[in-house]
Length: 300
Image 1 (cartoon, rainbow, N blue to C red):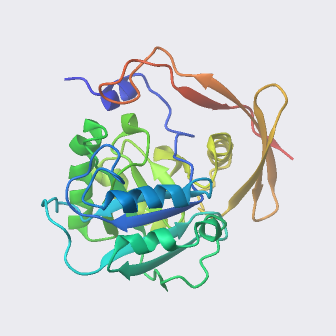
Image 2: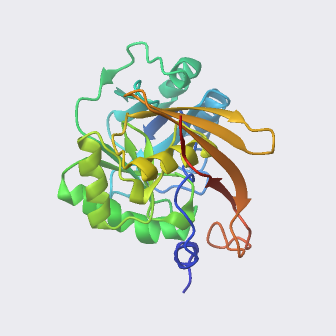
């Protein structure tokens, strides 16, 4: 039985520049089953889900639900629930966490400040290693369940990092997908071995371009340019690169990528389409998804 992930792999669709865009992630623990639109289709109170969606709109904050791998009982969690907030901009990345009795408390946070990278002393600083978020929501796409759940279980059993299942990271056809905090790099088409490599590299302050879909704090043209510079230079330090992006006037973008050591590069980026048509998610009609194409990397 063909899946969207199988077809995407067969067509050699690039992973780069496909990460969901979010300056800040707000993750709320909610066990039990998830629907396709999990914030309003789970055991989370519908009013709370809608309040979270409304509070996040236009702030740069992306809200998702998380749960422990393998625990899918149709029951409410006992006691306090975890809330994890992570800002992913280079040089300013942080992870804060708090426990709440009622998830509705999260809707009262200052989303504008969180999206801008200001936590205001919220909760406590996350003092551990990388946090792995593996997309497993089979009601949104079966690939996430078929490929994501086994990966989450394997990583959790290995015990090297904190691992959560998450409701949605985008890009089902790149399953299994994983977002890793604190830096906010998304990865796709992972195996158990490659996912462990990613987590070990993250713990050491590095990224793994081979499996990277991009850093979520950048929009897609920026993700494409950063990835191109990493390939051209071999740079893997997660916090080494920042960028500035401008429209180029021809429908594309010009992105200046800067290294912390002072080096700079200019990268032209254009938007194309992936052909032939393929379903972007299992069960959807075939389409030609947008594709970011980075041009020649020019040293400035």
